[in-house]
Image (tube, rainbow, N blue to C red; front, top):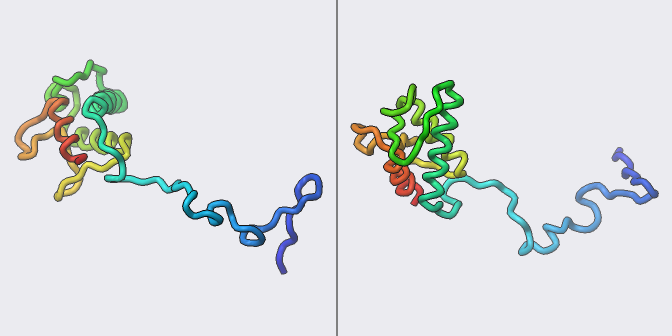
Length: 139
């Protein structure tokens, strides 16, 4: 047996979903709003200066969360060489956190990317060089 319709204050009955008129989004499909969150390449490319600002913020945040001394981070900072405890693992964590903040993914054919290391894996990069890699990976 079906449950009776619920009665609203004032005596008006509410219809169960699926009965009566169609939902507004089904009445005119052209006017539906896409509310499904997206990730990956579905965003517009960010400005280089915005990526630089967000990367600096994220490096400082990860350092603070790791309990390390808060040093000023700028475009010429080489996090792996200049920041206490900033190793390759922390660099990957920072890259993943930045990707989440920017709502995108930075991947190569090999999987997750550590943007603080050169493409050949032999040199630690400065923040401004990491931004160059992020801009390249975003496109």
